[in-house]
Length: 247
Image (cartoon, rainbow, N blue to C red):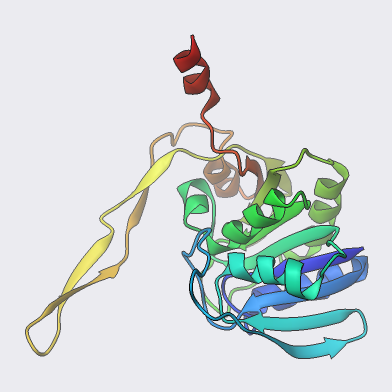
């Protein structure tokens, strides 16, 4: 099995290194990761920018490249420049330092990379942990990485479908399939003043869960101590409205 791995935090972070360590047991691993942190880049691609890709590490069964682009650039460069005609059997992104549950999925560079894999018909999975710290503890998540990966591969979903996997911190009870929680970000900016009297803003934000009583959402599943697995898709058509409009 050939596995393409990327993330949005960069090659130097613990999350991706643990993922590589675990997935190497399944086959050949090719890493194409951003040179610098690319959180919040969603599906962004670099138009008009000179992209470079550098081999930084090579051992038996593993090659690591860094790219000066976005996570989506990394996947596209990995497919066309590194893998050439030998398309990977699996694309995995993460482990992201921070949750990509609920509406976070639309901002996520991790999931942006996953959507590119799904676009090309490659089974694709994004892993995240609800802890933004670089010293985040992945020890409880580690035993689930391979079983979840193997289960999702065996599902053989249709082209364009991929998976968003999010874990809470601390001891875990297992994993459950969940739908995306409905919600939004509020109070997103904090105002500050610089020494010269100018005003600037830093993003903070509070997530507002608008269905806190629902028990089948990713937020609820994580709150109850389980890893949430959410099937998602590159097809963003809202079919009920589409059908209604055609009547």
